Image (cartoon, rainbow, N blue to C red; front, side):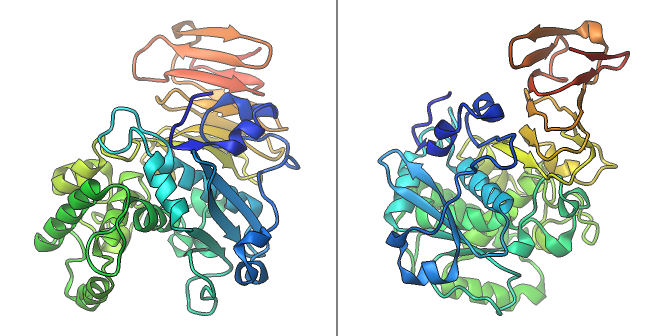
Length: 395
């Protein structure tokens, strides 16, 4: 297992011998639906306020042994808890060679030091279920699971807000915010860059530029959350969450941000692009995505303009199929790790059988594409069939 100085990935280590869990470093990948997901009751140490309003708990443990807390209300599924933890872990996973993210341990320690709690709340953000305790809220109706109908259909009535809200959590409690009503974080120099990019975007009308946004900007200014909201707009477009949004064909974040794709960020917001260029954020999603147990058919990791969710799934590289439906996976170029479920599973490659080398060991098959930048190197476990452009084989 890769060593992560930012985190002691206790959950991954604890489960490393369970089915597919040992296949990747970051994230948890479990085949058995009744296997432990690192979820427990809310610990007494959090206090009565949390215990009375929430019923389950999970965490990420920092290098010094401190906990970063995630708690959930009763309508939040265990799979949504795992998804939230995976995204948080993704943001805190070291990014070797980056300017501010090569060692994220200080950010993780700062979050724990600030006693930050990620609150997974029932329902939606409509004022009817406001948090009664301190923490960053994320609501049930805005957490998508890869492979669920909300994700597959890119349902913006239940838009995937987890990346935004969990980024706010990392930004506020870890990276740090400059200015009033804030406390210093672990990366003040990075925050300077974020602030400069935010000011540039506001001045040049790249973000929140409409006259109808004036009241919102005034509110954000008063609470000193301009840089957080701007960065979240960039991140959402960077990871493809707005690529399928048809109501604003050339804008991201409900039409508030000038770009809706990574390419458009590069062209239209160079300062925002610079924040994404080997600064802190990985160019792909590092966690192991657990595909919804109700999914059947072919889940594609390869971008296809006619398949809306691939705007987002194109940045995944590690996935685990759950449940028992027969499901297939079309791979991308990112050196994928794929674990099958209890059904019959096929992995789909781009080229002919003769263009790949195949290695088989006791518990996995490694398939490597000889054509550069096409299908990469793929580690496959519990996969029954391998589909090439000219034939299907069973190993």
